[in-house]
Image 1 (cartoon, helix red, strand yellow):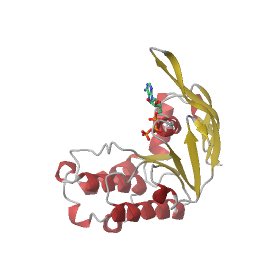
Image 2 (spheres, rainbow, N blue to C red):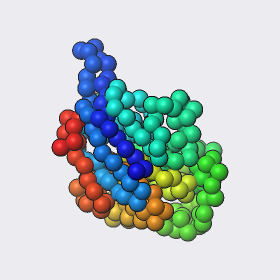
Image 3 (cartoon, rainbow, N blue to C red):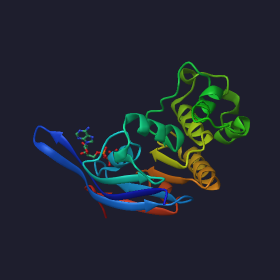
Image 4 (cartoon, helix red, strand yellow):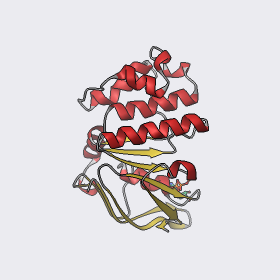
Length: 217
Ligand SMILES: Nc1ncnc2c1ncn2[C@@H]1O[C@H](COP(=O)(O)OP(=O)(O)OP(=O)(O)O)[C@@H](O)[C@H]1O
């Protein structure tokens, strides 16, 4: 199993005391599988994705990726997991402002010691082939989002985590980018976990889980 989540819980300390946000979530995701995570605003979706990415630590339970329990890793180990195994497409694009689109697309692959593959073909599929020499500040929000999707795919991670990855795109472009992500991830035998509010996008993936007030419904 590529990703195993067991009895995962998370509380945040607030002035009213600890507020539970995730309350015992368990599920598995295998290589080649695509899974949408839906739920109302505030149900804990982004919190769950952050725990899986090792960007925050759980209050209880476990996240195991490719056989490694994240709780056994320090900061450096979790960073290495994100560099080598897990790819993120989050709402903050985190593109590198000093690099053009071509170099942003290849940066993560190089960092992970992998060949970024055919960047020209990837750029065409992303609709960015005319923009390879531009810098992030010269792109629209939707174009930046496509670069963020592309640089994650170019690094070919075993697990792709995405939080509303097409939120800045119109419906047709969003659907095309979703199909691209799904197909590239599954062709590579990787797994895809995506948070979305969209029923339409959720329906494009194999399976679907729904969070309600921190529990799987
Ligand atoms: N750092 C934090 N400190 C305190 N509370 C937090 C923190 N991060 C998230 N929360 C709370 O946890 C709950 C779940 O937040 P989360 O962002 O996971 O929800 P979500 O399902 O992703 O929502 P949305 O669809 O609106 O993005 C919310 O009530 C939020 O206020």
